[in-house]
Length: 161
Image (cartoon, rainbow, N blue to C red; front, side):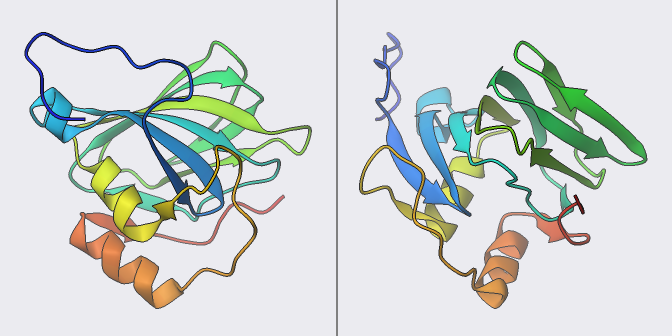
């Protein structure tokens, strides 16, 4: 996909599919398509998935929950988000989330300005099929290196359950 001043439409399932930290991310729009304004990703995360507490120093992050439920922590606040909920996670504030054990979660992830799709592509790998990836151990030193490159900082472990 490249920038097209006339716009474009992607059908269900279309877009760059990436296996990223145990999730399936499908990039619907990135910096090349939005002139750097934002990234829009459809994410499928397995039950119990939780990224480590982290900080975005350069971009705002938001989620719109389509399916499943999340417990979100942003700074000293914690919320539960069910289908239809919108979550805003401002830059500079440590945050994380955990997917309910009851089932996978599907959400739209928006970051502005764009760049998260590049981070996900560099850290992840092209999805071989449109499903959750097989479980694989994470290379923490590589994770930290690529996080720093894109202005993300590890701030603590994933939430305890």
